[in-house]
Length: 508
Image 1 (tube, one colour):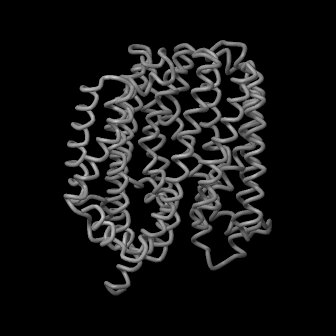
Image 2: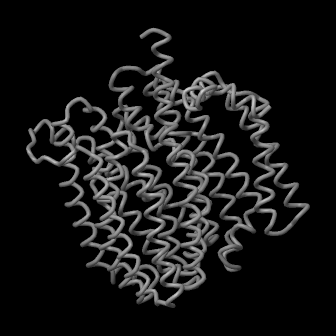
Image 3: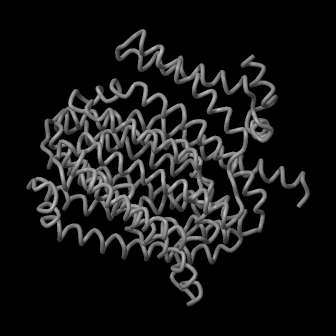
């Protein structure tokens, strides 16, 4: 491939990532506002104890949701783009996805329903948790198919609809359920039924969108080789997702087992707030996996490495400012949820650092998965998951919820650094260059600016003014240090008419 052709392919790939990130960004702004309102309404109407019961049940089901499709939602990300010129095979793949999802969510949801009493006796020991888990077992089944629909849209490189489903519709219907609870003074039980109704409504709208906007339909006629190819990928990925529960969700679950429902409530709010730092990487991951799959399967590793390097820098650049902002204004942010939640300030620092490291590593996990190293990914998850579980138990017993944050932060940092080394060793791909220093230097100035505003104002108003001023300083530093050539080219394709020159002229 010539240099000009390679350059065009890089820009084309980045253009797809940018479009996916653009829709994700629009969605995430609306989603953040709605989810903050949702959690504020719940914490204010239910209190820390009842909110903790909801948070524990929700966290458990969100953990099970990672495996309830038996890896089907990840398989479509690999196989649908891989067979983009073979519609019959795509339909076969989608049929296997439907079957796997139905079997998986029925088995896991049914087990959760039957053992809700046992789970309650082993964890919070609150009788209200039993009906909560029973209702959430139904929610799990419905959400499994919502996840499959979202993944199918992503596999077709249609970013707008999964963003619409996950970042607009989902928090909207959830917020209506919380608003009904607040206005009508519903009990926890009443809220859970409202929540179930909102999830069913979300699925109905998602299914309608998929039927109208996609030509993929499930077929159920397979050869043994097709079945082997599918499950040789999906089952290891499913096991990998199961193991990932041990390092992404086990902290909340073990806080529930070892501490109180109010501790779960505080910890869950901090997890929610710190997850904002992961949004840039999540935006990039909307369309990066199918692009990586196509580039790798067509033996275009140099192009893949160039795209990998650029999107990792983007991920770090955005995550750095968000982490600095939350660390600086941690007390004021948590105060919004109620005075009881400010005890999570130290936890927020620890989790923010861990999320920042994830942003620094970029989509390395997806690089491994899309380059046929699913068994290595599985090994990673199991090893680090076991480590995280052990650390959580030891440190929670000794330090309480702070110990949970220390354990999770260490585990997330280890797995992300290991992924970078594995991608380099297995495929020779490396995402770093001197350009990474630009956001690092700008971040220092942005952090100093925000601390200055906080020191001068010293109240909740600094949340707004400090964030705006700090972001302005950070952005100015990035502009002064200069854009990279690939970023100039991608801006020229995205911005209308005069492209980058118009943007830089305006900034000047």
